[in-house]
Image (tube, rainbow, N blue to C red; front, side, top):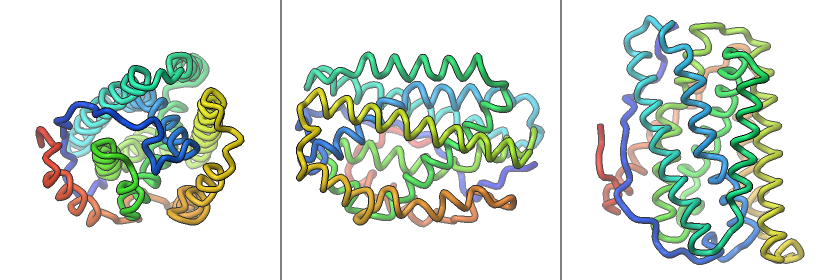
Length: 278
């Protein structure tokens, strides 16, 4: 199996300090904000899990371009973990959000996965997670108002993350196809990733809303329902691409959205938040 990534994967660093944020930094909506906070809480340890899962098979890859892609994938994911770690700490420092136990829950869940599942099973799960993040990233890049509704430089961080998830969206998949390629293992990995993703994000969102006394805020809840189902449709709009994963002939770059990368990189450069392009 050779690399099927049609574009260069560049490792970038963000050059900004986490700003003072409103408690509800997404359109002053607690339900949407805490959904996004829940996503961010999973990223640092999740990214490390993905790196380890791919690195386990790096020595078996013969294609020089795929080797280069793996190194760039590791660099990008490491930076994502660091930025979201800083963001999560800012939420704790600025708003005293009870994230420490939630981060520990993610750590323990992934430790369990490392003990319970083989290297190949964890790689298949990583392929599933990477597809999930890629289709969410595509929605963020495609629907400009998703990012525009995020307060200040926090929006730049999510845009940068979405750009790089798009660039490297097939790396884990190409590695899996090179070392195993079993269709049913890939499908099972996606099922496990889906279960974990939904369980953790919704559990954390519920816990944060309960902490803030916002579970019964029906206006915010309706706004969240609209956000997920209609505009921008964070759930409904990703369903077709999610289901495509289950085709035996699927490859992530069959959804070619490289044009969105250059558009959003242009915005990030204009905002002067990129420190480095490697």
